[in-house]
Length: 123
Image 1 (cartoon, rainbow, N blue to C red):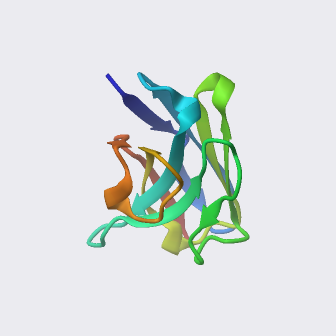
Image 2 (cartoon, helix red, strand yellow):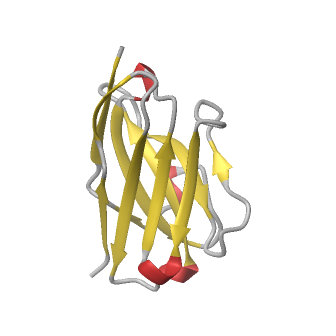
């Protein structure tokens, strides 16, 4: 079965960096667009970034543009999110997701989800 496993979360201070990883198995990773989403307590899950299967045009939420970078290594079935200049507002559970087709900002368009990794940014 399809599994997406996130790692790399933790507790950091404002201004610090973190790199999240998403390991995929059970699917032909190289034909799936991948995305990162996050959910803070009491809030809806929101889009963070997405990348197409061919590492073409990436998408970013305005709130992270210029600070976060999404990438992938198809040969390793891995996706990453480099997060720089973290802010307390970035505190959330971060999820990776996969979908057939192009990258999307909408949660409903994704077929598979990981369990999430917690990122906490203290001020």
